[in-house]
Length: 546
Image (tube, rainbow, N blue to C red; front, side):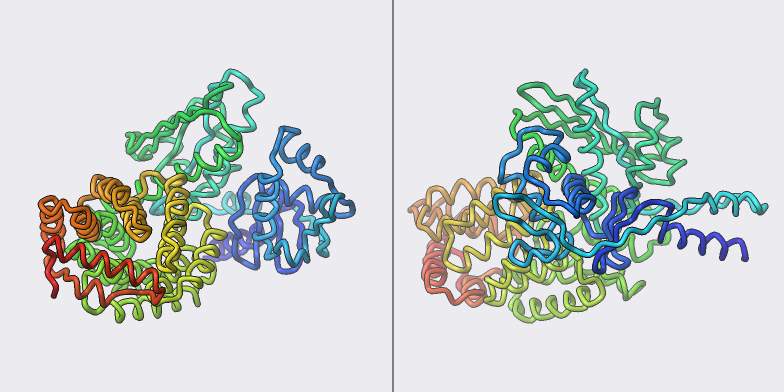
C-alpha cells in the first residue's frame, strides 16, 4: 500500500516537473520537452508547427523577430506564403487565448515583425528516475494493467524518398497525427517521445503492443518526389498483428505543409471512425459490457445512417451506458446528437422538444468540460435548429479552434448559411469538410445539404447530382430521397419522383409534408419562400400531406 502511494505521489511530482525547462505565462505552462501547452491542468491541443512557432517567439521574447526569422527557424528557410504564416500565427494566438485584435501576448509590429510581450517565468526542474527506483526497492510481482480502450501508438513513419533530409517532413507527419488522434474522445495515445524510440528498428508489432499496453498500432510510409506525395498507412490490431484497415494517399505536390495538414486530417478523421467500429465489434463480444462498451455500440449504430430504427438503437445503447455511469459525458453528448438527428431529419412530431432536451444535455457537458469540441459543434446544431444561425457559426468556429478535424462543423456552418437564405455559400463550406474528411460517416448528409441549397438558388438540375451522390454514399438517409423526389417533380420527371418518394417512405413511413413544413428552423424570407417550393415538389411526387 505504501509503495502504491509512493509511486503515485512521484508520478504526480514528475508530471508537474521533470527536470526540463518550462515557460509559465498567465495561466499557461509551455513544456518544451514534452512539447505540450497546458492551461491549468488541461492540455491545449496545438499542432507541432504552431508549437515550434510559439516556442521561437517565447525564446526570443526580448527581441522583435522578422518574418524571415520565423521562416528560417520554423520552416528551415523554405518558401512560405504570407497566408500560411498568418494562419499559423492566428493558430498560435488562439491556443493561448490571444487574438489579432487584442495582441496582449503576441504583438505584430507593422513592417518590423512580431514579439511575444507576455510576462514569462522559466521553471527549471530536476529529472530523477524515481518510479524505477521505487519499483526496484519492493518486491511485488508486476501486475499488468488492463489494456485501455481506443489505445494506440503512431509508430514513426518510414521515409521512402531516399533522401535523409526528408526525415523532418516524415517525422512531422507522425507527430501531427499523434496530436490529432489524441483529440478523439476517450482515446489513449502514446506520446511521441516513446513512439520515436522505435524509429529505424526492426518491429515485432505484437511485442510493441505488449510493451506499450495498447490495442492498436498505426504504421506507415511516406514517399515524396518533385511532383507527387505518396502516403501508405496500416492500422494493426496489437494482439494479433492483423491489419484492420489500410489506406493510400497519392497526391500531386502543392504547398508542402498544407498537404501535410490535409493528409493528417484525413487520416485522423478516418481512423476515428475505424477505431470506434473496432471497439464496437469488441464490445458486442464482451460477456459483461460496461458503460464504454454500450457507448461505442451506440456510436456504431448512429454511423449506420439516420433511419428511425438506427437512431432508436443508438439511443438505447447510450441510455444503457448512462444507466451504468451517469457521469459518462461522452454518452450524454451522443444522446444529444441522436435527439438532434431525429429532429433535423423530421423523424418525429416532437422535434422542438428533442432539440430543447439536447441543448440541456449539452449545457451539462460543457459545464463539466468547457473545451469539449464535439459538444460545441452539437450546440451549434441546436442553435441552427432554433433560428439562431449566426450564433451557430460562432459556436462551430470555436469547435474548430479546439479540434481542426471536426469536419461536421464546416457542414453545420454551411447549413447556417442555407438557413440565412445564403444557399449559394453552402457548397464552399461542405467542400472544406470533404477536403479534410472525404469518407466521413456524415458525408451523405453534407452532400444532400448542398442539394437542398441548390434548390434554394433555383439550380434544380445541379441539385439532382448532389442528392444522387448522397444516396450512393448511404441509402439510409430518407430525407435525401424526399428532397430528390421534390427536385425531380419540379423538373417534371413525375415517375422518377414517385419512385424516390417511395424509397424515402420505406425508410421513414411516418414522414409527412406537414411535419417538414412545420419544422422550419428559420424565419428568413428567402429560406421560407424556397422551402415552400420544395413542399410543392414533394406534393407532386406523392409524399403524404399529413
